[in-house]
Image 1 (tube, rainbow, N blue to C red):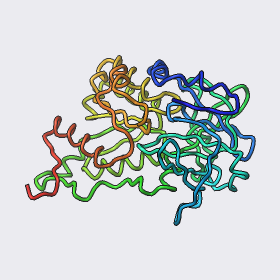
Image 2 (cartoon, one colour):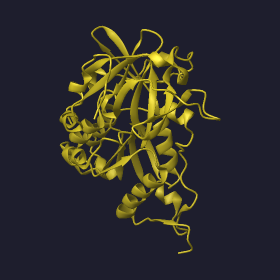
Image 3 (cartoon, rainbow, N blue to C red):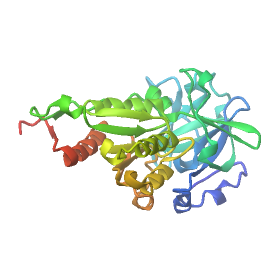
Image 4 (cartoon, helix red, strand yellow):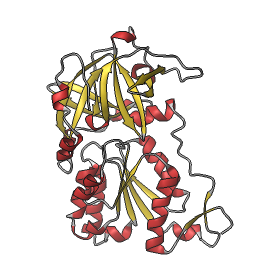
Length: 330
């Protein structure tokens, strides 16, 4: 299933998706480490990696984004290859033929990330992965940082990159999805939804979509922050499952991942009844067994605003009698 070159021995490490499920609920992850033009180490979640190979021959395409170096036919599919160094506004990688391509799946799409070299796979705890330093500024492309064997590892915000390189990953609610005329949007503002996601781009997308349904959104940057908030509510005498009609949580988050967040909520007293949707770019390898294992109510691959709106409205309807309909004159 996985192919890795240069004698790294990853084929034996990346044995199967089933083995990766052992990390579910344990607040652990595996990172594939790679380098760009400099000596800095970067990481990508193994869950998202389908294959790693020496860069194949690339064909240029017209009107492409400058960060896309070309496309290649890989196992019968045309895959765009994106230069990660260019995508984060650095010079292009030199000597493409000596570079490697990490074939990955994000948000239901397959793309290749051009990197200078691939290092190894490391097993880490999400508690050891932290948000980028506040001094990094707004223009950075990091979603988290960690340390391994005295080396700083930077985790790139791929969702931000894809939103810039591939605008087709749109974050607007479809035009033909509207609220019934009799619904009072002001009354809906009394309903609240929690969103936990470490990507600022993803938080913005979800917030924009859900607020169009007239629902208030409260944002949290990772699982630990979301859980601390729920615990504080519970300790103050407020039932979190009544305060929020649902929680929409990413899976990959620093400090505490979505799996562990769900597990903690399910064992957390009054909050245990919260309706939880896991909303993640881990679309290619996720299966129903994972949802069942941690006790989430549903899973939705990023990012399809119409589907997200449908799931949210269905939940809202079940707790408050509201409904979304298609513009069809019904």
